[in-house]
Figure (tube, rainbow, N blue to C red):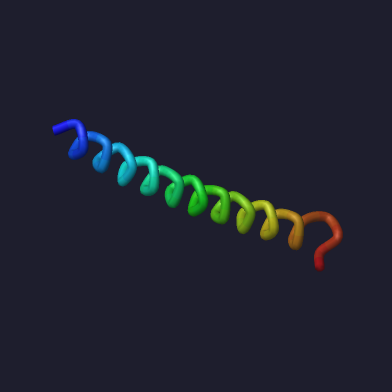
Length: 42
């Protein structure tokens, strides 16, 4: 039972890490879009 709980925790941590990376990538894309447009009008 302890091993099952440990495995589930590790999987949840891995999914949370992937979610964090996806969120960071989305944030970076949003910032890049904002920087590339804007007042300078690239």
